[in-house]
Image (cartoon, rainbow, N blue to C red):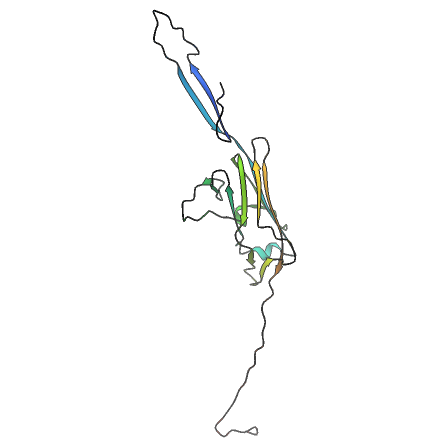
Length: 193
């Protein structure tokens, strides 16, 4: 028999042993063992990060872009291994970096699919700047594009959820200023000396 009224994502089936008993004047006491089998429904969650604006694999060598994925129903966070973990008060949510995602060389798309409990999920990008460790060039969100730093989805048993972040990046323009150098000599020295 199915059990109803459970929290979202939970299912329970009950089994009885024996299936039935007969009570009579000679058999006033008997028992049935009821076993509840609880399971949590799961579905697939795919997170994809795509970058544009001329950024290349070489510009992402520092791998310092970071993301958090939270189950909004339970408050738990997905770690890089695909496990949901509870973060206590004052704790730090686990982050997922680009190196934790699957990547095809010469593309600017990273993606990974996780099997997770059904529910509502949100991804948040926690760092918007990356540095090419070979050249020292800094790339950041392109100011003229619409930046999306979070996305939401619902995972069901029959329909997987997708979280997508697509952002344009540009090289950061270093601030410039003027520098004046002056050398003054004293002690009786002249231009002719």
